[in-house]
Image 1 (spheres, rainbow, N blue to C red):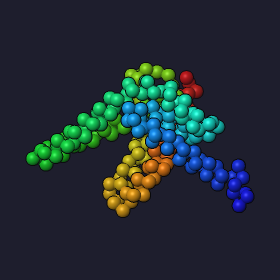
Image 2 (cartoon, rainbow, N blue to C red):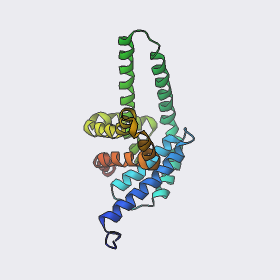
Image 3 (spheres, helix red, strand yellow):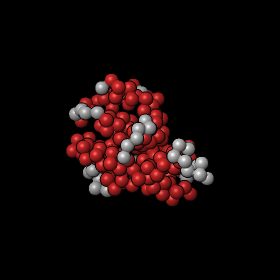
Image 4 (tube, rainbow, N blue to C red):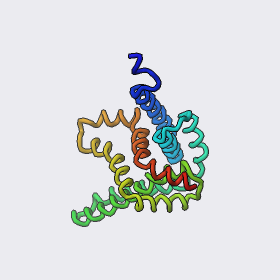
Length: 210
């Protein structure tokens, strides 16, 4: 037992990482509560989890808070438009329910889904870019779009990680309570950490070139 709890043991490192992810997840959820600050909160989460993926020693909560504060104002520039797009997409999906032609409704729903997937593909790169690099909102969005296309395999893997909890919740009703608790306790930070592991090599290359 003493060996398992030794600071250099794999068990201790895994336990420490899990504890850190729980703390980051709770902070991220708290930062998302005002809704308009969710962009900065998710950026801070991306910052911490990428540093964890890079195995950098840092004060987890201090790093999260510093990133949240420094990115708060700029995050409004992309998060609020994203929020508006999501709300409009929800309204459009609701209106599609009133279309009498199933083929037309299906085609429009397909277009809507593709648009949201493209938006998510850009966001999975936008978060670490804003977390680690200085640029304008337009510059970050443009670079994120190029990475979403240029690093297509990594983008797809990140989207699959994002989609898994949604798929489980939607298609396995018996798992909904477990999925909900998972997301509350560790889910957002865990997903961000998995995405960081996928993106780490690319982000490292960009940081070295900066």
